[in-house]
Length: 81
Image (cartoon, one colour):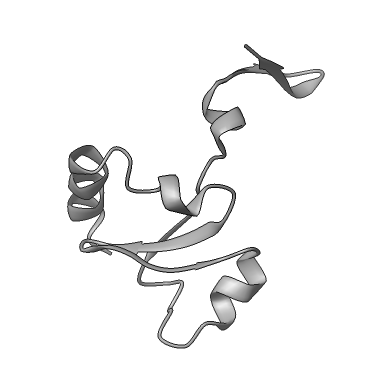
């Protein structure tokens, strides 16, 4: 996995995931190669080997504008601005 190239792509393309908001995406050093509504659908796409790509869910606008609070006893809470 070329994690350094992927991280470089993310820095150079800060809005690169905006068109995929709320979707699961497969990323290589060249960018997004596939997207789907679910991780299962992404794994089933032709040409996507989950062992060779970075897989993440692109955040929605609401998630980008939220404050996430992590607590040990309660779990994850979302507080929108």
